[in-house]
Length: 256
Image 1 (cartoon, rainbow, N blue to C red):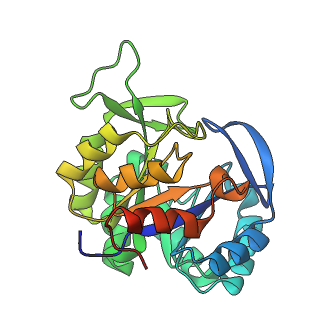
Image 2 (cartoon, rainbow, N blue to C red):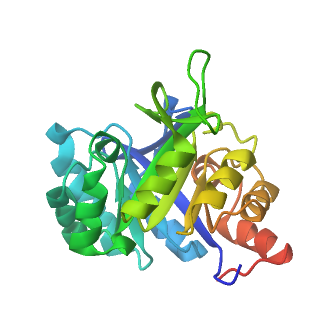
């Protein structure tokens, strides 16, 4: 691995506040997104990811306002996702201060959206968010993982590994791989899932879901992640960004 591993705090935002739960349920307040973004910037985070976990078109104006205020406070790349359905949505988020935009459900419903966004703004702007879980009884996929929607609660029957590979071919510049079974558990990343996707894609791969210790981040990088993302361990100060970077560096991987 030649490029520096990125450490990325994630701000899951609901109604203008950062929230965090387990498997996207039992959400609890974790603070003001602007204040947290400022803290992570000062702590040495490489990027920030901002996800509107209850996005709806009716509340979109609030989200744009929070994105703008957050972007004004930080000097590191900001990825924003949640409720992005069109090229126009991407354009508006970029104008609000986002550097990259995450797309999930809309791309599942209409895969050509990936190519449309990449053609208009460049692949480097488009992050495909893949919410993957292990298949449930009655569902079969080649990899054993399926793409989900609605915070991991609704299965699609689409093979998660195949979908990540197809999205990269269509123009996604990065894959944000969310292990929904591990989300918020602090029991570690799903290393099998990371390895399976790594074998199929050459674009940068961001591992998300399950971080609890500094060692977990190192394991994700060893399994093929180019970047590691976490929320609750940073929000509630169980770990600091610099701690995680030190662990990754001590394991022999380059960090910034």
